[in-house]
Length: 127
Image 1 (cartoon, rainbow, N blue to C red):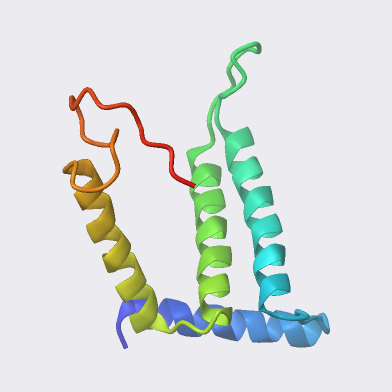
Image 2: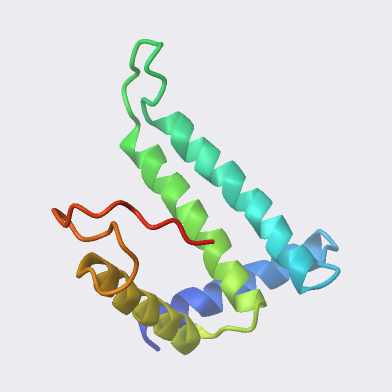
């Protein structure tokens, strides 16, 4: 079992445990995604509060272990949402690699405008 397979297995096991012990479930796929977005927003807010972003206050010492913990929490909810949306480790790998290719194409200036460094192009807003 490779490391991504292990992460997916362990995350699914954790989700099943939580769902059973807390008697929870989601109404449908949209509800599941919505609830995970709420959780991700909360984790991003916790991450944001871990770093000095308030320019109107005095900085505090950043707890980098906490920053890592919040980043991992984001991964937990992201992987869980991917799994509950029907993806396995291979699917997650393929989705990542496909998007990686798109991101490289953007940086190369092959897709949307405004990504390539020093291109002089304004970012192309696309809905």
